[in-house]
Image 1 (cartoon, rainbow, N blue to C red):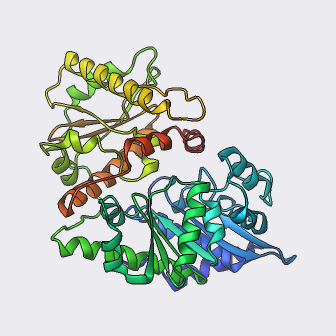
Image 2: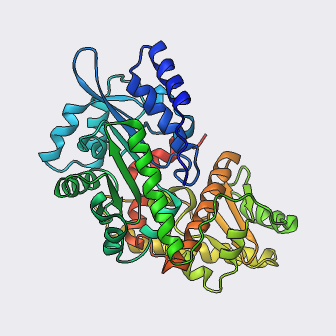
Amino acid sequence: MKSRWNDGDAARYVEAARAAGQSDALGLRIYTSRIIGGDPDLVLHGGGNTSVKVTSAGGETLMHIKGSGWDLDTIEAPGLPAVRLVPLLETRDGPKLSDPDMVSLLRASLIEADAPNPSVEALLHAFLPFAFVDHTHATAILALADQPDMRETVRRIYGDRLAYVPYVMPGFDLSIVADRIYREHPGCQGLWLENHGLFTFADDARLSYELMIEFVTMAESELARKGVALSGPQLSDGTEDMALRARLEKALVREGSPFAKGAFLDYRSTAAIREHAAKDNVEAISLRGTVTPDHVIRIKPWPLIIEPDAGEAAIEAALAAYADRYRVYFARNATRSSEPKQMLDVYPRVVLVRGQGIYALGASNKAAKIGGDLCEQATRAINAAEAYGRFTPIGEADLFDMEYWSLEQAKLKVNAH
């Protein structure tokens, strides 16, 4: 992976920040957030987050952190709302915070009351004692992070430069665990989050960003060491069966469906997608889950799989079977919850056509395109993970907790339009 840092571009962002009465650090934060967000092999559609700590004119320490509803590739200053750092740091040694309490604390700490909600990982950013913190879901990292028992492999690749964090659900618990692990590994330059992604940090914007690029490149080299070539983003180049599309639309657009007012289908057929869709065990692989936890809120835990020649009756039967499987999944996992859960709709968001391609489904064109982009990246990560070893994402219980996490559902609503 190549660094996109450019001194001239960085200087222009600093100049723009000064002209707007903002700090140089915020200008650089906007710049490196955008070059991170501009690389689909680092983050996609609201994934990942960035922050910078600054001192206000009054001497107060603040942290600008990515706000909910913003994408890194187009982020501007309002998308990095400022929070007071001290109240966040006080939670480090305090009692466990519930999700609502954590959100309330973050909102109460905002400098501007009408700013967007700070990232659910704001506390983790706050605890790390560096000015700049970057977090991504890089494709190469996911191919390795979604492997079983990777602790020793990560140590072999990165030595003491990365500290290994076992999977913990994002939010307060992850912040506390990751902070403890960071403090147990003084001198590390990043955190490897099992089944999740990568954090890097530094007091310099360029260094934090280029550590991310370096560590992702090292992951690519580890894949290459085992003969796994991770391709870059691919454009759809396969021929779509328009009759199959029409049959899918007919089955989806009906009363009671989330697509009752219209189904938007985003078709992708790349070399990587066709490779994945042609696997004999594609259904078994698909049922393991998503490549990074937050994908589940957009594309559901698994796709619907159909044959290329599926007629109306076959599609109806497949949708019915999908709904039955989803209801069983919900019932099996909802009983563990300490709070009542209301089941989401039982329709898929991805339809995989064996050997041919993938349809991402949405109630809007934007939602369908986001799903298509996530599937394009995910299939490349899954192919690489399977070629390297075994694609092993978080288990069903953790996936359910993520899908039905109130904070993730709120994020989905913000991005719905």
